[in-house]
Length: 413
Image 1 (cartoon, rainbow, N blue to C red):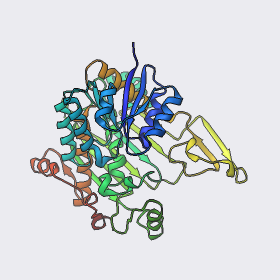
Image 2 (tube, rainbow, N blue to C red; image 1 turned 90 degrees about the vertical axis):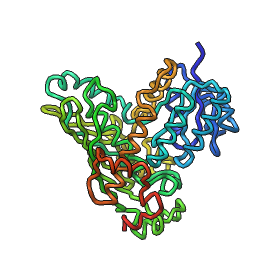
Image 3 (cartoon, helix red, strand yellow; image 1 turned 45 degrees about the horizontal axis):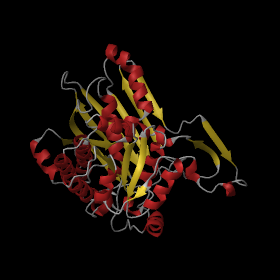
Image 4 (tube, helix red, strand yellow; image 1 turned 180 degrees about the vertical axis):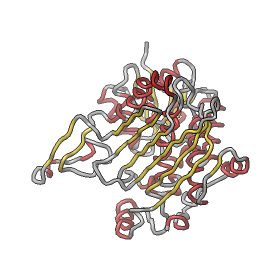
């Protein structure tokens, strides 16, 4: 049986991470790349890693004709255009079996709805990539605690955070292109994984009904003049004029439709975590039991002294977003697997081969976008947003946060 051929649209940071994940999956090849920059480098990696042959394609249409499924890993502001090109390619006869989109599905509720509609026109299965839901540690705790949950009841509180020192690319820092700041970038992860772990074992991912969102957004580090200048010099983004939040925290309340029990997911995200590097921290509390996960608790540590530090050329070889090249360093030996990338690709491929959506589909991704935008609305208005209110539902359909409009100074300073 021939290997399943994936095509990547985009060749930046997340595409490179996903290529590392593909190299760990039997029966899947990275067969094509279409990107404005970096395509040749990514294709060369695929060929050297033995997950090709991988070719560079000049257009989305040509890529769709050469592969079994395509994955959108391009920047947020290009998602609608790329989904339209995929739709056109399918209608012109491209035989792909499914479409993948990296988080977030859209920068606004309206954009996410448009992408869902375009996907429906293709008639193809979809997979929304939210890697933390697929983390082996998260899946393992659910399996391990299933009999406890059956006896004692499901989790009542989930807490999730993702934090690091800031993104790699200038467009990520620009709220008018990215769609906001850290809440748009990483809050979607924490909200999704919180929703997932609170869901009773055996129920679908959308079983719990979102009831309300309360959130705060702040500019704690990158609004300070010294660091604003550093950001401007390094990334060309001026937070004196168009700032985005570098810290957010909030709570989403969900209701169990069968028991009417309310449960809560707390999320915290920052671009100002100046410790070892990327940290994912999650825990859940149930009646008489709990779980806790911290991605920085590695079985491997290394130490590099000041004299030896000159030999450390790339700090990110040990850990994503690493901020140090000396001292006692945490090392993650397989980040692509730890963070859930391997498992989400396996799920998407198996689902597409069976003719069905991935575990999380585009409709789910649109719901996560809605929860993130409700969090922005809550922070702007300084109140809890009740998602069951009809006026609120109508307002969210066309809502665009002040931060994403480039007017963040009105709410952050």
